[in-house]
Length: 360
Image (cartoon, rainbow, N blue to C red; front, side):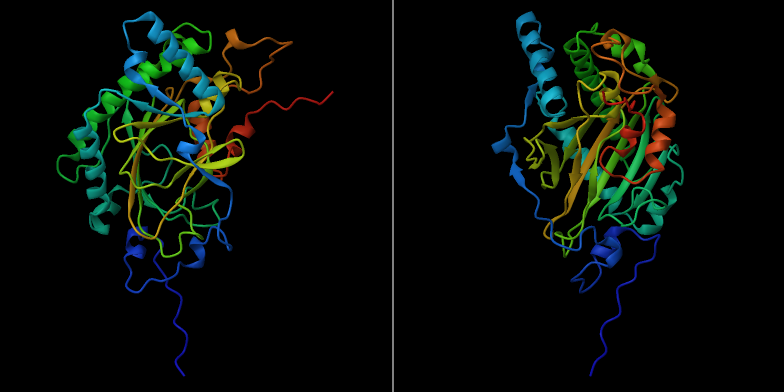
């Protein structure tokens, strides 16, 4: 009688792509099992849930009425959803397609080439790795390879594949322009001066982080997770993908499948915006699921203040009686290190800076 096959062991330094391409892989190692029972939580389609859509051309319109309506819609999307799609943003479709293909080419490099860019600390400007968000705190690995790069105020990027660095530099610049208009609209929607967030938090030196994600096919997608439920650092994250579904956002206690409009940005509000707005605009909790058929590639651009900026509730939005401060101010660098030293689990990091008040 043949002995049972030994469990598949993948070296810790290997990438998930290597595991996914293992011959005759029919099940996942226990270290990648996010749930021992198939995920059966309520999930609704994005069309059914009517995810907000922001027409960027109206936000930049010379018509005061159109811009006013776009700002109103933007504020409502931030307050009700913490998530919206941005269309007509002006970034060429060819540039977006080129970025997706370029990042996929990076993940298809030989392991030895990718390992040149491994980093160890959250503040390393280039970090390439796999699976776990924080290997010292996580109890399970995730079905994901990643490239995480600081691209502003100083631009960093791997020097391979050929041409991707140059394209990324231009793309990041164009995304910052879109982000700048969105943050001005959000500032206005909060009742602040249009340039309040930009000037108060020195956004010219704001930290911009590009995160490329690679989710290969998984033989047991119902047991694995690309990324668990979490909220993001910064003010806004702008994401593009290769039209392979997998992103789910939390809304009204349900998970919503996001089907991106072609050539749109998927935008979620992040922790520092929730803090600055004193909770009026909640950071969105989202997760990345995986499938057993096709590789999903996404590129998230996290936009925030500078590392040395201290972010707290805007004084103009505070009233000690009717709307007291709900969050403690914290330097962005310290908040980032706090997040990276904990498990990626919902809003656990944000909860650390919430001011607990006695119930009367």
